[in-house]
Image (cartoon, rainbow, N blue to C red):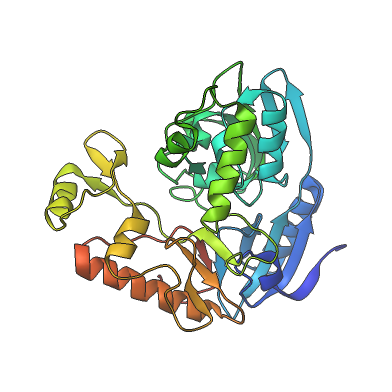
Length: 346
């Protein structure tokens, strides 16, 4: 099969820069190549891992004993305020294209690394916006039915950082393309405290371009923007999800500390709080760690490969942080990146 590679190091395909080899690797740039890859794996009874941009991923040092199928599908088309994007399109490029056309709805999602195909899987969100607010439908390969299907927003089952694609129907669907509906002549979203502070006292309301630039600057300041030469650039972004607590558990948390605990809107009866705040209050400061894996010098939520780190180095640090937060606050942090090739659960 054309394009099929063997024993390809996966470290070069992840933003963490760690991970062992894929037994087989195929960068599928067409739907036919994707189908051929799946047939290849099925014939040989190989497990399949579908790879996007590699920005939300930690691969084990031993690699993956199967086929890694990278989705390299390209293409974008517009129908007024609706954008159809192939799963392999660069996400930040899509945000830039929307902002250039004066279309609101994703400006706060600027600077997030990865590909469009990952946005519905994780229900990607940041700075007050999330994909569920703009997604119309997903075109996907249903591996169970062996057919291409279209899923509505409701069928995607979106919740905080989750969807059917990474929970109840994990491994069933391969996202091929997504349709997003943006808004013309709408003001940019200003809900997140960092953004509100950025534009306080300005004589004119910010434009979409202003907000996009501000988000990218804020992310860069937190080490959440991949910039060549930045020692904190090799990471998977936020390593832990912000915990969503019951009102009672949040009250218990607040009673344990003297200062106000960060709180953000969540589902009815729930409160979302800051994983970064919990990590810092548990004693893990920016720059923590003496080995090749450490906490970013810019943001406590990002674990980084300082150079030469292994996946086990990263996991060892993550477990230490999780244990410290749980011992201090009774809250168990949940990892955000997908873990591939590990023998045991994190």
